[in-house]
Picture 1 (cartoon, rainbow, N blue to C red):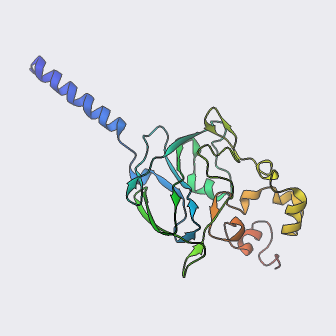
Picture 2: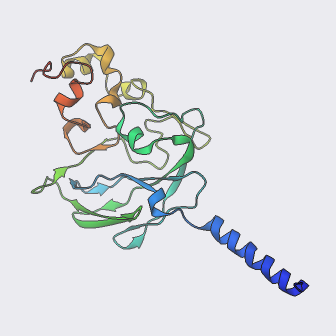
Picture 3: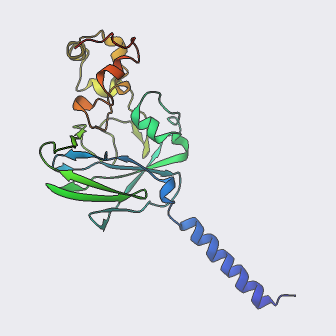
Length: 225
C-alpha cells in the first residue's frame, strides 16, 4: 500500500503534467499558415501574417527574421462557421467552428526575410517589382488591421462574415464592376468566387487563371479576351 506522501507526490506530478499539457502550444501540424503566400515577391510595408490554430489553444509559435512574432487572436462568430464554397481562404481554413485566427502585420523593408510558423520556414523577398521565377504578391489595399473590421463585421471581438457584395460596395460600385468585367452584374456579386480578398499571386487578386474561373459557370472556352 502506497504511503500518503507517495500518493501526494504522484497526484502533484499528475497535476503538473495535466497543466503542462493544457498550456502546451498546438503542434505545428495542427496550425495552418494561410498568408503570406510562398514563392512571391511583395512590396515594402506591412506583411499580413495569418495563421489558423485549434480553437482555445495558446498562441502558436511564430518568428519573423529569427525574432518571436507577437500574434493577436481573433475568434470566429458562432453565426459564421460553415465553409463558404469556392473561396480560397475558406478552402484553406475548413471548419471555422474548430479554429481561431492569429494575426500579425510586421513591417518589412526591401530585402530578404524569413517567417517561421506552422512548422514551416518561409523565405520572403520584399521588393518593388517581381523577381525572376517569383510572382509579385498582390495584397488587398485595405489595411492589415488587427481587427479585420475594414471589411468584416466584428462584434464583441468575434470575426463575422465579410458579406459580398456589401463589404465591397464602398469601393466598387455596380456600374464600375460591370464595366471592368464586361459581364452582367448579378453573378459577379459572389466576388470571392474569383478574387482572393486577402492576397493573391495574380493581378487583380484573382485566385486562378481567367479560363479556370470562367469555367465555373461557363463551358470551358466560352470566355473571351
